[in-house]
Length: 350
Image 1 (tube, rainbow, N blue to C red):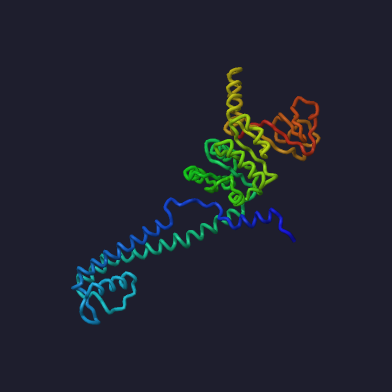
Image 2: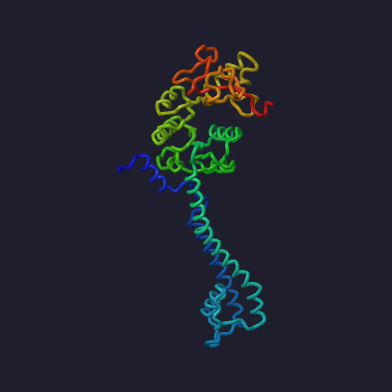
């Protein structure tokens, strides 16, 4: 049986390491620092044993050379202890107990810590991230964590969205740290690459928010997302009005122009002191009212728009490709498949 495109995408996603983040210190530098510290401690013990060699006895030939000191240091630090060279004077035994033993523990902790960090911890992190990837479904994907993206994430969380259901992708490490502090899953990668988006299970997402900072980058990301996820809703930020059509042609369901929205607020404020304030009230969950878009409920089918089960006020009904206002006779009764845009009070309004 031939493999479908979605099957190939799932196979490619499994091969990609999900939700990885670049390390502040490269692996080779971290290993070098640890190895250097361990060698420095070993060299210190060699010097201590060399200056205190008169307190040591060699049961083989009775003479302590520098090579004997190095040999005794290594078997002492590794706690092997063959017994052919041993401290016999009170001073040498005190040095072993008070100075060498703590250094021995430090060297052991350095190597144990290295083993934990490079083997156990990294293996566990890969396993944990793979489980997060496998469980990603019906999640929010935010591509770009600049001003608009961070505000969108903050608003989602304020509206009750679990941060664990939000995945943020950005190329800026510091921005991702901010997203991670909010509890979001993060991935430092290029959102225009197919394999990166597939690692986020983009086809299983609830919605995708695109705000990469540049119109051309945003439109390219929308094209890539729509190619991989034909049915996932996409919202994108576009700042130039002539790019809005291109964004829609690329596959965006919602195109937000912050410049145009600012113009609306300014125009509203020119016609009344409270119009702009009310628009901001509608847009933010922190206000007294909020706009909600949802499918019509089964118990609402056949009712009028004034009889919403939620107690909200219906402003618009989307029926097929038509947008019907509350003043139009065609929406006297709600039908199956309708999408309702209503205004309802927030919890803080009570």
